[in-house]
Amino acid sequence: DLTSMCVYNSGLFTNNDGVLISPRHAVFTRHANHYPKVGDNLVFVDNNNQTYTAQVLAQTGITNYSPAANNDITVVYLDQDMSENVSM
Image (cartoon, rainbow, N blue to C red; front, side):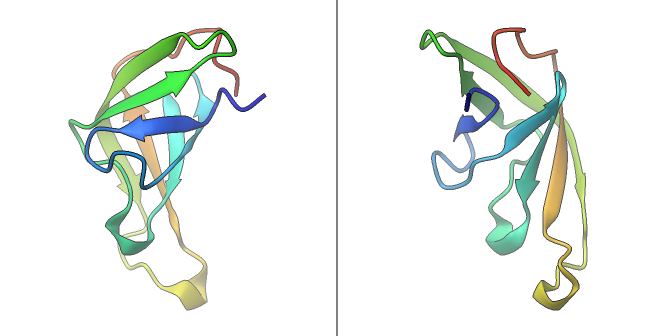
């Protein structure tokens, strides 16, 4: 079940996917500035092709990105809980 994967980001389109880790949090890679910013809308799709959109209210991550340090994550906080039809 891949419904936890973000399939679209209004700031990056389809250039970076993330996954839900809670009903209101998702994690993304941080490299190359390919992560959602505050105000971006994220789209998730359930197994019945129903779409769910949530806006990024906050994001945090490793600010001193370094490939050698393996600190390549950003966590975003969404404006609403994702539907139960979208897995984690």
